[in-house]
Length: 538
Image (tube, rainbow, N blue to C red; front, top):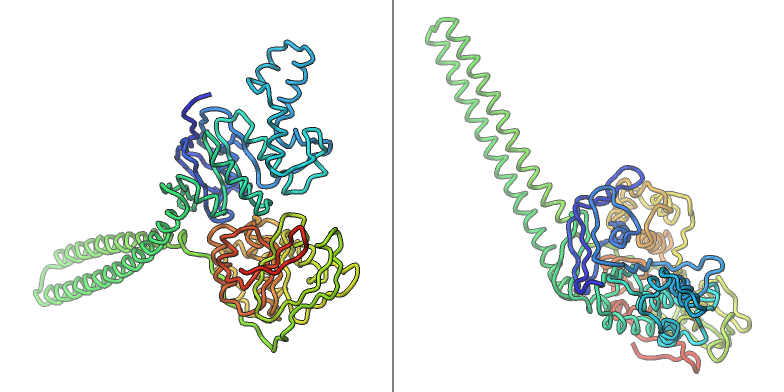
């Protein structure tokens, strides 16, 4: 294994099924520094990660690697019959180890295993470190939750002999403890690391941030905080440049008009003098031809100058569009809101055992609470109870205001309809221009608005689901959000934070992203712990 891990892109392009290029002519080298890859949803981060890992072949160009690459997708599936060791990507090595222990002398088995003679013990220790107690290499994978499957895949990646580790949104299904452990493991990883993520805690541990945008790849030395500061400066610089070039175009067009008017006055004066000078017709004809040729040449030069001015403005506008933040328009709550927004009286939660199964609780007007606790502690069950998707086994659960619920799966009312049709269904009385404006501010403009919602990326679906909830004909006074930032890119997450900070309604949100929770203006927390549900300060 080389001591200098690298991944290199040489003029790499990727073509979508409809023939459009998702990105083109990318040149970059990722070295041994822990690097974060960021960019808006739909720009191609996951595709680029798979190209770098060798899981996809570029339409043009090539990818070079210093050695083996371990790649983890956003979603770790459990095929029928798969075991934990298979999810960890170590099934081949385990089988080779078992054959060697049984007396095999096959060279291929020794090559697969390498020097990992303690792999069985190392995997079990890694599973225990990740709080996967009672889980072993032979445990059937279908018994594990999504978060547990991700932990197993991470354990296998950290035990791999890979030269480079590529992780695609590894913290999406992890609770707070899982995120803390992941952060510690990434700090210990000794070789090349590329992290595709919107988790600001993880990105702050990176030594380099690379941004993928429609303009290509741009590298920023330093962690996320440095990148965020530089990005804000670049956004302002792009806006300033656009204003300067628009001003230059106006001045240039004014100068061209003045030149044209001067030429026309000179031509008219020359024509009068020629007519009064009794010149021979042949001379008059030549002068006319010369004047026409000169006017045509001047017109062509003016046209070329206008095109150059327009091109300068288009280039500056493209920079602004690439840097423009996603915007969610504020929504005003309507009507009188009762003091007791939601009430649970001796409610027994389904699927939950122990002290967390019972809850007496009142959610009051204007409260903004985070639901916290480990995966499986009952947070999603409580949200579904308030949203009427589940009923308590005993007691009662009542919500007294209009509400909107967004689950982790971003369910939409018309699964096969277009983006525009989804929003129109939510608010049939809103003007179409307003609907288009709201979608455009979310990055779903033009042709994107006419695409089927099923063709959207996970982050784009979350933006659309938010729009359908918040811009509904009957605006909600209570928001029930289950990990709303899981599939949002950084810009959209910050836009959501700004919206929720300004939103005057009542809020109940389950999330493990502490940076997100700090950004939405909480008034407190409802924590699901070992002893039951407890109110905690923000």
